[in-house]
Image (cartoon, rainbow, N blue to C red; front, side, top):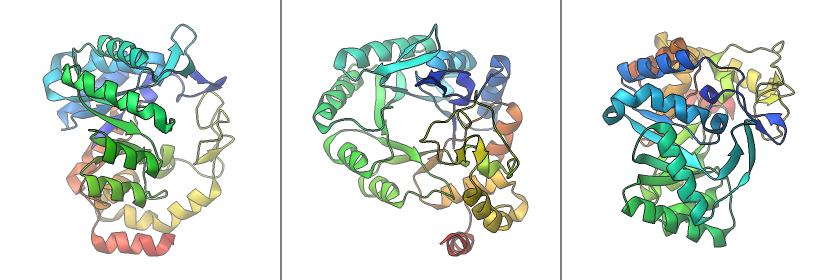
Length: 309
């Protein structure tokens, strides 16, 4: 497993609405990352958009003395104003990609990026050639080691798989929101499936119920219409009901609910890499300990499928 570093970017805005997870303690974020490394986690996924660069800065500070022990993944494509903590647009030109790459390396404190990913969910097909040609050049020059696309669209994943030298698809996947077509693309073309939202924005932590309301400074309560699991800061009842039906299976064998949810992802295929988010060392430790349990069994997976469909 890896860790997703969206939340540690702190407060930032998209379309005038909060796009982060509220205030964050940088010292605690650094402790959490160091805890993760000590527990065997070596893959960290961030973006220059998260906190308009702040997540990269914190991650770079945390791994500065452990660079050889970790795989750093970041993303590009969105422009931002760091002073206003605001995403301002999209730039996927060759020059823009090169500028973004240099800036990310500086914030991360590294002279190469292990995995560089297009963060824009979808782009015109006629622009894709320039983007991926630029990434091929960056790889040949040694600035990046591999590249991928953060997208949930199967056609985009197929394009990456068949017309580029890309290595990964980053897309949402969890027990409440499956993505079989994207998993098939990964399996057919030997791509890693990096699974964002493995805990459904916290629904699968079990800490929310029908009375829960999140504030407007949290992406789950700020009103973005693409937030799947919450509406107006409240967990959507259908997801809570679905979780209730499978909770006993996910928590069997001594697992916590979150650990069971991660076990479901590992059982979905041999190339799935969940990247749960975090704000605290305790969250990191709980998630990392899921590796001690491993994937759910085929019988458990079958029982969950029967209950949810």
